[in-house]
Image (cartoon, rainbow, N blue to C red; front, side, top):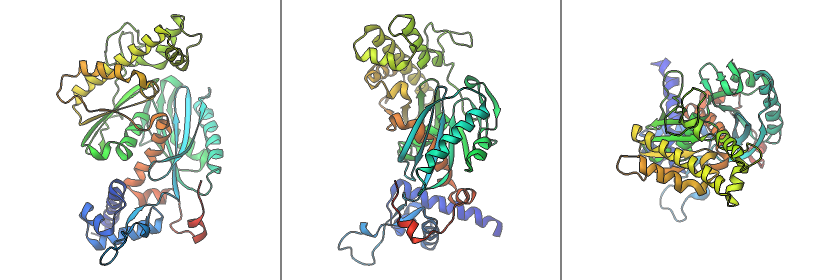
Length: 402
């Protein structure tokens, strides 16, 4: 039985963290009720997690006048550790830092530089190192790296046709350049994980996450776990939704080619709406009352709504969550999307669609959350990998954080 103990210990630690993350603050007795662990086991795990700095007691939350032995609430300690995240997009790179409750502490954006994968990742590493120096009082657990393309998370390899990257050891390159452990994941999976941990995930048994910006993607979770098929996630880029936009695959009416930022912006240039193929200019023109700009964005919202309806019928989840700037940055077009969705779905109970609460912080938060997900699944392993000390002096514990 001895070889199984580390696994049991890690599982119990993760169970305690999960209960507190979802329901906290909780007393030790309440943790036992939520996890079905014995009180001695709960007490041991809480003691270890407090010593590690992941949890702390909140005696100020004990109800005034409570009868009997006070049950001191326990909650996440969000003052010591942080997870860094880097999102690599086709046109923009976003990096940020989040605490254990998924709150984004800070983030920055830079244009995606041209050049080889090695040069781009070295450039990112330099920016991230400078960024983290401003947060020296935080103990950084590592870096979550999220991006589009074909991701081999287990080996840390990335294929990204839009960037011209093929079998790039992205995780290892960034790890060596920053000195931090790096967890690579697909960006839609990372965004869905953010929703699972800090959004709708704890409230439903199945969730379909739909993302649209420059690329489109979906992720399905069941009982709090993302479905990952062979080779990673699936693709809805070529979902046929109708229309005359030609896709690089040779067909017309593919979802991604129809709704991508670049498609809408380029069409606006051809129609004389804007001078440059920039989706931000198209949105500005629409808000200024330019009819053709309004129509282009309405058409995209309608196409997105049809896609959401088709996918909802295919997967039949408890909840559909929409994310990505193609949706959140044009909230005034949401009624167009929802009308098309309602007209397309054939299943009863269509009122299950929500927009993510992360908004413009989505990319940075999602990248950070990929690492937090690993922490919550196996806190002891990640802290050891990150070579973070399990003890600290009183001054560091009480030091103010940014």
